[in-house]
Length: 241
Length: 164
Length: 85
Image (cartoon, rainbow over all chains, first blue to last red; front, side):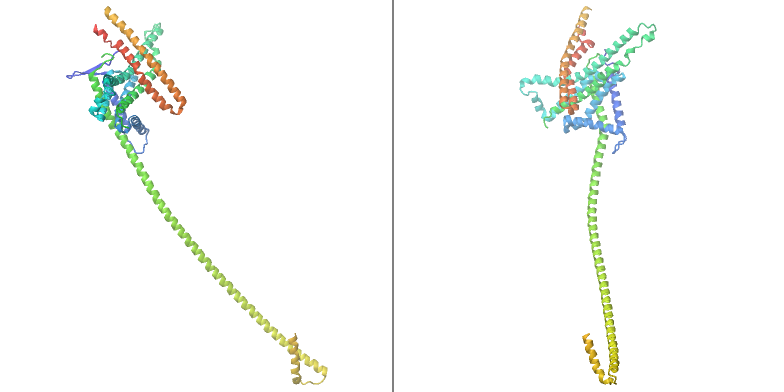
């Protein structure tokens, strides 16, 4: 099992561009094209299913943000939509043979760190730097290390959860494929024709059932969860309600 | 790259990618849809306002029409009443005229009858007196001076007439 | 060579041991699912809310198992110990 391959290196800066980043660009292109396609020719009286779908998507994200974070954070909706779309489509890209971009720990760590920065930023915005620092001494100064650890554990658990789920799905799928290939060659191996014997017959159909759970369901669930956790943590420091 | 690895440049590029996608989604999905939703809300509000206005106008017109209709009904009642009154007066007049005429006719007829009766009675008196004269002449068998006895006979007949 | 073999074998055993962490989330998620089934039985009209809450809780509870899995994956595919030799 290999990590993401380095596809090319940007000269002079010596930046390695990995498979993950290129896949992300593909996902971004797909999402952008989808958005443009969904929203071209909008009318006040909706006449096409396309427009209804676009409105449904936007109102769904808005409702999710409203229910979880409250109306003060409604400007978060596009960020949540972007995060959800990238995570979901990025994870689902394993269905068409790409390496899922969330199976790269750097990706999920980037998102979790972004969430961490937003959490702390929101905390500082609401309580001021003094209040933010004092929050770590709550309820007694003795708790300082524990508070620090629990704050730092947030992004780590978030990123590991997402990465682990998708990577586990990928590992299990590839294990299953190799096992089925071995089974095929074991059963069909006695056929003298080399070409027929090399057909991985059992790889047909069977992995699709597992892929419904490991790719489709997990992709959706993990995208939902990373969005939910980001929203809950960011608005969680807000005690006004 | 190893399977579980942290690559700083990948992290930075993923941040950039996510922020760019955020911008793209905002520009291409949220802005148009939100603006269209807002436009629809405004339009619905306008439509409600217009409907409200139309309804109030209709209410006003309705009260006006009701008032007019009531006036018209009153007028019609008045006209009918007047017409009925006039007709009644006319018919009363006609009837009283007819009654007057009939009464006059009856009176005239009665008068005529009276005259006829009187003349008939006079005729009968004359006849009777003549007859009495004749009879008396025959009975007495002498010439009775008609002029002498005529008074007596007339008196008799008078008494007869009174008696009758 | 022998040291390398020992490290690899120990890593494989360690990966297997790390996956024992799967017990915890298994019990926890089973418990959560049972409670959710109870809740649906008590209030069938709130099925959607209960299901999404349960999935969310399950996914959060899964983290400990995922940590074990990640440790196992690191030991198997990105072994840092082998470089220490």
